[in-house]
Amino acid sequence: MSFIKRIVVTGGAGFLGSHLCERLVEAGHDVICVDNFFTSQKSNVAHLLSRPNFELLRHDIIHPLWLECDQIYNLACPAAPGHYQFNPVKTMKTSVMGAINMLGMAKRCRATFLQASTSEVYGDPEVHPQPETYRGNVNPLGPRACYDEGKRAAESLVMDYQRMHRMRVKIVRIFNTYGPRMHPFDGRVVSNFIRQALAGEDITLFGDGSQTRSFCFRDDLIDGLICMMETEQDSAGQALIGPINLGNPHEFTIRQLAELVIELTGSKSQLVWEPLPEDDPKQRRPDITLARRELGWEPKIALREGLARTIAWFRTINLGDYRPPTPNY
Ligand code: NAD
Ligand code: UDP
Image (cartoon, rainbow, N blue to C red):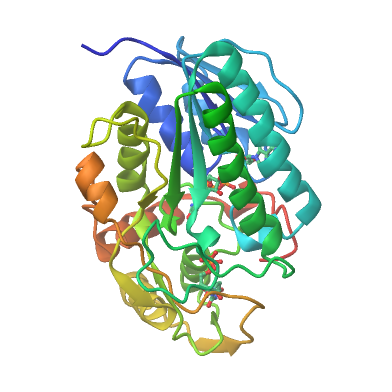
């Protein structure tokens, strides 16, 4: 039997957070969404505001927060390169001070804490695909470091709190995830390509487009997050802490992605080449052996289907309703 829980979702108004809140509200839980709206807007959760088991709190997690809860999903952090590089010091503060504040809250409430980490902890990986045991190849000095190193530090904090205070904690490393409600101006590759294709604008390939990513549809990812939170023990009977990779193991070049977006939108857009950003990882694909074994989880939605659903959503939105939060779009 599963009981109703009070659940805090930081970053709950964002792309992934809003879908997670939706799923938890539907399941009957008492959900508190905490967000400062840096990269999101209230419209992402407006449809939940009338629900008696949903509450929205405008709060910046670099400041302490005093709530009572059973679970915390810590998702608050700008995730797109253009967003996290807009104010890199703030990005680091959000990852590190935010994790300390939310772990402190979890400790006081004896809540289970789940950290949304990232495949960026592997940097520009020399091991392919990336298993959780790989320690990564991150440039600590480059423009992606505020995010990569911030998330690595947050993982360290999670483990230190767990060892010091015997808390129930979990770490998931999320690989590129896309879907409806992505910020249309976040500068990420899927949102850029779809926006450009629908407007008939040039599609911007950074570098020669041979770099790879593995794209996970948001519904699969949300299933994985909830499954991780709800799975107490691993197959050896130990507390399931992770880190566990969550992502789709099917790998595509960025050029293949562009061609698929053009095909699915029926666009006449042309491909144009722009310089590859500094430290842009050349390849990325999750090894999800652990998630398959410990969670019985694997993605079900293929890129073609997920992209079609995302394109259908992009066709319905009014771009004027979205505030470009950074100049990088
Ligand atoms: P997003 O930008 O849509 O969501 C992040 C949310 O956090 C936004 O609503 C933003 O306003 C909020 N936020 C940022 N700083 C905050 C602060 N200091 N206090 C309170 N709220 C704050 O991005 P997303 O794609 O939904 O990512 C959610 C989480 O998942 C992030 O932690 C990200 O690092 C992680 N992740 C996402 C992906 C992906 O491909 N989508 C991949 C790896 C990791
Ligand atoms: N990219 C691109 N054109 C764009 C946006 C991104 O070619 O308009 C490339 C980017 O250089 C990277 C990949 O697409 O190699 C994925 O970029 P994104 O910003 O979505 O996420 P990342 O995985 O790099 O964090």
